[in-house]
Length: 632
Ligand code: ATP
Ligand code: MG
Image (cartoon, rainbow, N blue to C red; front, side, top):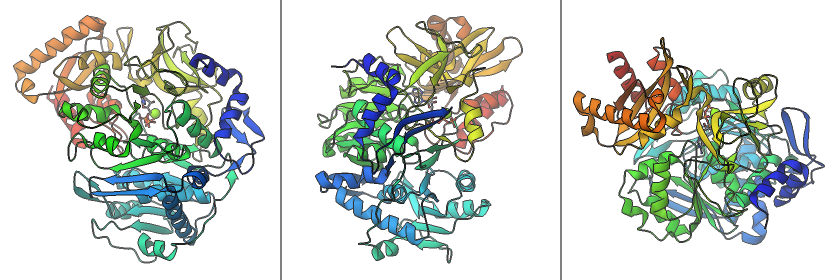
């Protein structure tokens, strides 16, 4: 049996041999002539000369062996719907959608913007686009008109696919008025808007522009739409980053490289098999939804669960009940969701038969040790943290469950994934840090492996300047995350590079201070930011959410808890890391994808404009911090 170290090593030293083998996990109309063309760094072309289709690999090629097996399992606890689509059903639905898009004039290379709730039609829409070679651009359904308008302008979609409404916590959230407003705001106008009417909210249609899905679908019940065979390098989609650190970047993905990368990851990382069920709790608006709700599981011939609803409704056991019912073998979620479950009755974790489940993967933000321990104890299954970015499309750091038995170290997303030549670099000198436990910027030597971003949509210059120029004199991809690697090759992510605090010459990662504070039994969640200070250069400021608000109901008890936290940080990291203040709030400002907006907190603390907040979830959260800071 190969050890993981040898597997990883070969992926770098025999790059073309390694990826040439992985390429055989997918179907090609024409086999690639060249595995990787890196003649124009940092632009990598994968599987050059290869001709394929993403939808064919996700749907059509399974018809031969598993037409009647489940492909898409749609579950909504919002509208109490549950529907299982076999591969045959999915194939039919995708062709109907593809036929309608063609009727609306969509051709290969045209963009289609998808602004939809988590319903099966959203999956049909994505697959229909890649089927006909159109480039989809999914915009998270929770975004307001401003965020949507800027994405419409950037993508210039011929058609927008949307719905009357989403639903959250049992309440309908109208989409159509937001979409109308966004189209009004945008300088670019789509030719058509295709609408799924769920019957949740009445919607007004714009004559000539808006079309309803149902009658067009009925007209095309039996229309055959063949896959459009495209070059491996043909763009399959664009997707924006979460906007945690600033203006979101439009990530452009290819076809062949992405298809191979996902197929390989399903085998080596997630270890899911055809005929089994995969359950990712993400949203199609995020990269995890693209790679591991839609394309990855389907390419692997698995059934994938698409879940619309909250993790705690009707109760905190809903996800585990689905694991039992559909015999889920691989599950994928985010630390933020596990923290939500942590506040629920822990017996819900043992109420269902989870014997089918092999592992729970978590990604998206740092997985703190107490949360990892809690879910690990509760489920009794391997908990596998994995670290990646919208830009990469699949994990950079993980443990490869399909290659060797994983040994997790809580707090670490594991080792460098095959295909990634991960380096830690000194952010000042660019020098590579090779020893254990040295802190540096997590970087990847080019070429990025298959599946990673090709460029920034219509902006090659921004791609090069944003990602490849941060280290002087060296062309290397920066993740803008700060990390450390231990002697066993396990990485620990310490925070974003702009979250490094320099207190009187000591460089500290906000994550380290947060971990220390989060270990206090009364703290549910905490954000630490570096704030400019005349004397020390920077000081750390902490904003913490307490588990029980009565603990900080008055000034004295708040000061008492603050003093306890100071002691904890002093003990763990030394007095130099002690925050100037620990302030208590009921909620932290986050992106819609659940990531803490530290840059906005910093700006508020420094009395600056917090910048682009279009992807922020709850504006009241930032207001609390503003109030605290101005009351000082
Ligand atoms: P933007 O780039 O627009 O500021 P973003 O970086 O939040 O937004 P994403 O691509 O959704 O957008 O998130 C990727 C980032 O999330 C990583 O760079 C890292 O900071 C964080 N992250 C993802 N997974 C993990 C993980 N397992 N552990 C720690 N951090 C993680
Ligand atoms: Mg980012």
